[in-house]
Image 1 (cartoon, rainbow, N blue to C red):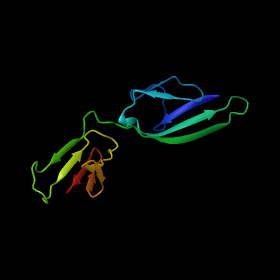
Image 2 (cartoon, helix red, strand yellow; image 1 turned 90 degrees about the vertical axis):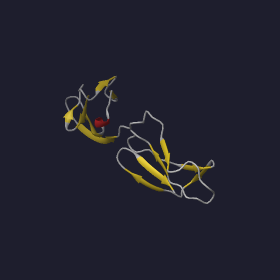
Image 3 (cartoon, helix red, strand yellow; image 1 turned 180 degrees about the vertical axis):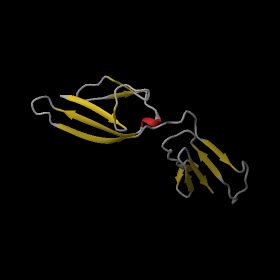
Image 4 (spheres, rainbow, N blue to C red; image 1 turned 120 degrees about the vertical axis):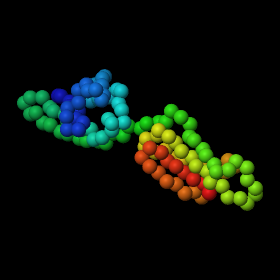
Length: 127
């Protein structure tokens, strides 16, 4: 039996983008993956002679990039009077996919927020 692993339509042995190690007829281990490694991977298994049956399956690989930094919290004011309205912004720079942001007021979770999201960060505002 033989095993082939394909990414981007090409058989992936050891490339600059990834190193395949500790692999056998049932398992492939990828090391040193980058965000660009994400995509559709295909596994092809071929039986030995005399039948040579072949089967292929595919799966999507997502490479998560966890930020090295803590979330950044910004507010428009630092001292307010009772009943005033403030705007606060929480950003998670460098995360991919975007991180989930949960707001707490006095240790109680709140969902009364508006959120915007882009490919690199989640910006969440509490007003």
